[in-house]
Length: 293
Length: 303
Image 1 (cartoon, rainbow over the protein chains, first blue to last red):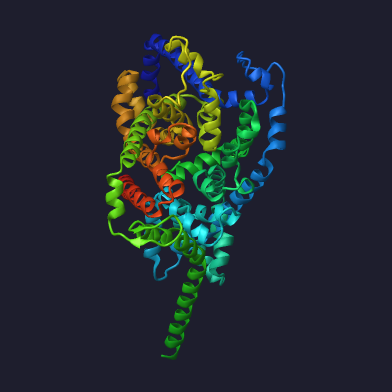
Image 2 (image 1 turned 90 degrees about the vertical axis):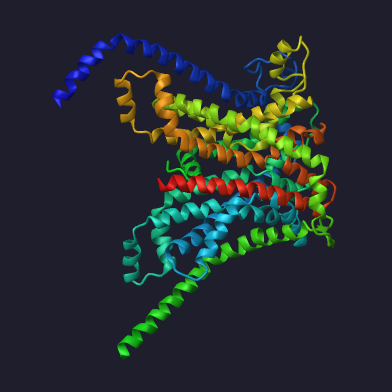
């Protein structure tokens, strides 16, 4: 220990001058990093600030970084003159149902793939992998035809159904169920517990963190979805928030403040979810990219 | 003998029980993926060989739609615009993300948390929020970016999304801002997996920052870089949302991308058959790339 430490101390004092030089370099790097981070955040800041400026100030060209007077007129305007309340309900309901259905169906499927032996197991696994490779954007035409046939366009069901295809959730669950030691299941089976009990009492609670991470990221994905809801909901009353705020412009007059208010309203739920569950979101992204975080 | 028979029937019942459980657990998945993935995919393949409107039957025309589309000037435009967009986003985004990840990784504690949150926050926002925000920032009349534009354009503002040569670079820039947080996360995970001992050994040899990066970090982070590149390549081939939103009210045909081409054929021109064959072509391109990505991931997993 001491024999090892000695040369290190000697060396450290020898290189003292250089270390200090590196520190200055390091400080400059830190400052640049912070400046870049603030620059990256600036557009979001600017959207928020614009949304609370009075219209006159927005188009005065002064572009001050802080509002001269706080005004919530833009928010009041979009509340009164657009269907944003209905879009919020549509987004909330569809995103929550998508999240619940995806988590439940994926956990069940992953448990069966991981723990049970049944004919057709391989076929299903290949199907999931194939699903990874097929771009949902290519399926929009036939999703639309299918939803039209069942008269589901402009309905919650029509927005929800094609978004239930999230194969990555099954894959991640399967990986985690695979790594639960077999002894847990065998012990439970000795007590003659059925597979449902084992899944809901042992496997899911043991992987509660994964479930939370997957649910959060599924919810964010569903809330943010644009292309499919944009096609499936053509009436103003059935749009989701992200679609609605891009479609309605006529009723605005001076648009900037109102558009920023609607942007802030649309981004707020996911921003809050992210800020509360930062670690889970990060974990979910790592898992879904196949990287152990 | 009797005991053995009893045991066998017991095992058989267990097996049957297991099949039944599996059926119930797999059921929802089979229903969802059968009805919303397998069935539409088959229908798409069939539709691509017919001369049909978006909704309704059509005559079987064999490969006609494919021949027509491959000779269609707008398809060529969509293909090259998409390729251009991929070129403008994938490699720049990867390099910027790696630089940010390196910068973030050397910070500690609250500093790291704060900086990372700033870079990552845009990624979780809906595309329409990103569109509205940047549409305001680059607005030709009051947008902040016009201060910079005026400097380079003799005091005159330019619409970045109505000037065709500036359209793709502008949308690519916004896309990089929006999505780099995802790549930064993957890079940081990769950087943390590099054992600090390797760096310690290198700093004893008094290797400079750049040598440390080029000799140690870059080769060791390469698998993550390859992953980031392929994920983005596939994602950007499927680009639609931003390009479509920024092009509303402009000359959309000049900046059209592949998914937008499918959208236009199906929903604006009511040509279901042709749209399906365009979708099949996109499908083919992405499957080829996905198989490559899968091989890459598997190669990493085996290490």
